[in-house]
Amino acid sequence: MKIAVCVKVVPDGQLRLDPQTKRLDRSGEATLNTFDVNAVEEALKLKEAGSDVEEVVIVSFGPERGLEAMRKALAMGADRVVLVSDEAAAGSDLVATSRVLGAALERESADLVLFGQQAGDSDGAVLWAAVADRLQRPLISQVAELSREDGKVHGKRQTEYGYDVLEAPLPAVIAVSDAINEPRYPSLKGIMGAKKKPQETLSLGDLGVDAGDAGEAGSRTEVYALGDPPARGDTVKLEDDGSAAEKIVQFLLEKKAL
Ligand SMILES: Cc1cc2nc3c(=O)[nH]c(=O)nc-3n(C[C@H](O)[C@H](O)[C@H](O)COP(=O)(O)OP(=O)(O)OC[C@H]3O[C@@H](n4cnc5c(N)ncnc54)[C@H](O)[C@@H]3O)c2cc1C
Image (tube, rainbow, N blue to C red; front, side, top):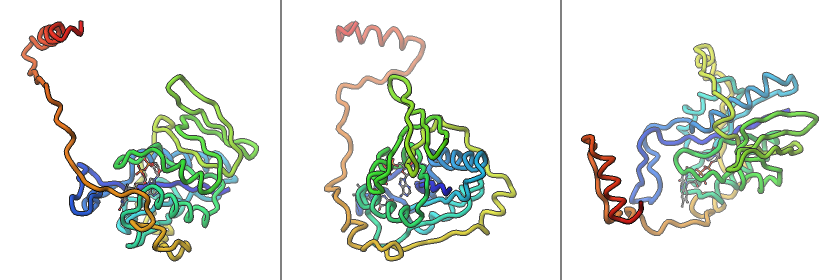
């Protein structure tokens, strides 16, 4: 059995939009998306628990320098990484990203594909659904407990009203919640060994994806303009000198909200 974990490398620190490209500025320091570390941890736990799990492979789509951040997953214990990187891919929206990632996952033909809950930069929490659709595989999202038995996965799915307990046949796609586990810290030995593990970089051509099906050409979203959010209008800022609670009550009384 093979497990693939999809991870995103995201800007480390304050997010900034580039007015020229109208995209997120990804030129600064980058780090492994925190939510995806939970997915890596879960894959490693499944491997440690099941002797039939041969490999945990980390898959990402993004700039080539993302490899460095991806090594954290190798240091934690993953076996190898595959990064799809291509200049023609810049400006890929959800549609194009799911197409490229779907092609990379088809190539891996993993029995189980794990995703994190959401990417900390774009916060879409939707890519896993688009990829599962492309792969035509069942999906369970927001999984807070995961187990595997008789060729099936069982997921306890967090909802607003409690939990759904769902089962899906393998091969399947699972998006884990950040409540699923407490990720391990990479050991010194793990960090030292990470660089020697297989790290493959693929172009769109290697996956048989046309340049016109990725990047801006393959996207269905266009950003027309960037602007500040509208001003909030009637805003009152209180410094708490001990009388803030009283002032808030007075304010609410005046607004007839109490
Ligand atoms: C017009 C437009 C242009 C864009 N241009 C770019 C660009 O140039 N570069 C860029 O990086 N993004 C770009 N984006 C953002 C990109 O489309 C999104 O990052 C992508 O659709 C995933 O959405 P998300 O980040 O909200 O991920 P979510 O749906 O929140 O992610 C869920 C999970 O999917 C996985 N995941 C997310 N992204 C990746 C990935 N790239 N590789 C592997 N796993 C992943 C992770 O496990 C993550 O936890 C652009 C978006 C738009 C609308």
